[in-house]
Length: 477
Ligand code: NAD
Image 1 (tube, rainbow, N blue to C red):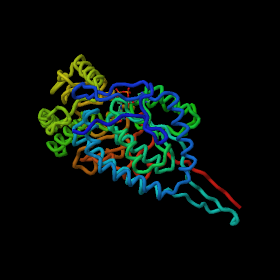
Image 2 (cartoon, protein in one colour):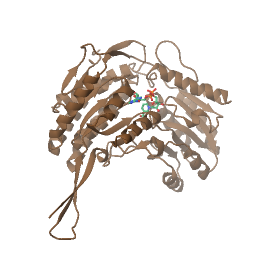
Image 3 (cartoon, rainbow, N blue to C red):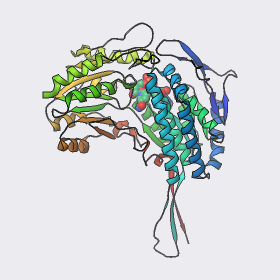
Image 4 (cartoon, rainbow, N blue to C red):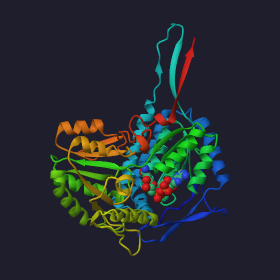
């Protein structure tokens, strides 16, 4: 087996570790084994990263989109070449099954390619003047130094989306990756280093998340803040960015409603949703979360859903037959257990699972809860784990109202064979993304983002550079 990734900071083109820096353990969630020590950035390191990113921006902002595109293409190629090794380390420190981990790296190569293509099409426009002697130009310029903060559930994906967008737009970036699962972000630093990205454009730091984000966001050098993570943390960072008038992209939590109508192919929907629910052990911001099933279909849906989840092989993500790995760290086991405890207290029925698996590692089985009220914690707070409440509904207006009743608005899922119902649901559900009869979001060519508390701005699609560019108007006579 290959070695676990060597962990360091990456600042101004140098990989830095040791030198008396504080460190923290990186733990394998399937075994509890300590894999490595992760160095934290000191204030001097953060200052160095800020200076490097600022200096590099003065040149990079004038770079040719062709050159930026070539580096992103090279990064895509290296990601594909290294996908097996990076994927194995991602499974070791994050827990997801190896096939999911390798799939994450390969799909991210497509994200790099997409940004490589789109960055050559960052156009301005000419506005017809009132006086023919005047020329009026609208140009889009890179915003400047970006500070980005990414979580542990898709460590490669969430970081590479922000990095590709910043680099493609002509910005520079300081990214704090997830300390719980750092290998994938470290691998991104090596990829861009080897792809020939000039020093200072990409900088990777680690540390105490609130301290690092506070320091970077307050710095006058930083012009843009991008965060993926929970709603409460996103609101704190957005408030701080607002106080310093900085542009934000916020990719926050969700509580995705699933609407299964009587006329859908019920066994197919139940099987598809069960498999999608356990992806990354349910630790996905767009995970299907609240299952509303129409009355006539309810019993059949529940039976197939529970049977499918019962058959899921839970285990170490490096084992060949594993379909669902452990939760990413110990605190997530406590968090999911507390949702179950609250549901039990409220008189809900636990149809499947409900208790941690015990033994070594942070394993929690697929769990299905019924007879639960819409006001319970599980139906209103983001569980972020392999737990699914299933409830009944009677008509379309009622279920859309219930789907829209929470402050979240990220993804949503509708299963129906009625064109009328599909159209009504897609028009009326308050969400950044609506999936009808399949799962089709998070592709590089389509925008990904939420409304309401789930965030501000989109990543991917032709919108991907919007958060990284400023508009300048030039008038000339
Ligand atoms: P958490 O809220 O403590 O941390 C979530 C992420 O935010 C972590 O990566 C953490 O390092 C980072 N973070 C926390 N405080 C920060 C700060 N002040 N500045 C910068 N980064 C900060 O919770 P957790 O136990 O790690 O994760 C569970 C919750 O996080 C879930 O309930 C879910 O809502 C949310 N989450 C969302 C996503 C997503 O894709 N939107 C990803 C991971 C976690």
